[in-house]
Image (cartoon, rainbow, N blue to C red; front, side):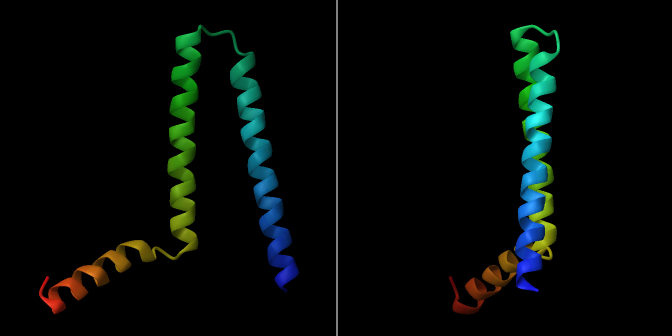
Length: 80
């Protein structure tokens, strides 16, 4: 079962790399000026980053906010 997970993870990573490469190719072959192209690439990179962070958060089960809340509770308990 571990092999299935690593294979699925590898396939997902390869798929995402392919999607990114395809998006970059399309962005670079569209007729736009330099500033327009850079603005579009920055916007797309920001969008991809947000989606990746959300995906990572969902993989962790949304535990980051709970960890922050636990740390606050520990600080209050100790009296910091």
